[in-house]
Image (cartoon, rainbow, N blue to C red):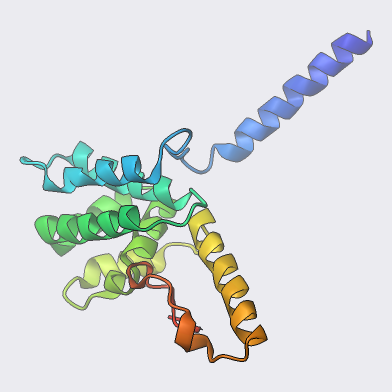
Length: 180
């Protein structure tokens, strides 16, 4: 009898967990490294560039943002490939592609584009990105935590924060001692 109640409880919990996860797409990051995801964004150079290629670039970008490991070359590659994809598609098609994705994917693309997400040459895609509901991704939280730790160490040494601290510009969110 107790075993049956435990099985029923387990089934209910499983259903509730699955229902809670259904609202966001699952990322590809299970055992994938940041570079593997970054390489998926190389599809921005595919010829011809299909709608599926565009989706894979955008979804790989989202998946990388779900990984809390701070990056380097992989994030630079994603940034460059998103810029390339936007240039190839043009403002309207890039904006339309973003609108087809879950809002979390759109927001992740904006985060990876950083300051370039609000380029005046791409008003439609800039608007689409700015309209996405805000959330904090795992990678963004890792950068914020690192920023906090570094600023604490700098303050302990009585140095100006801008002298030793500079997170990558490509992410657009943290540069020097101020959020951008």
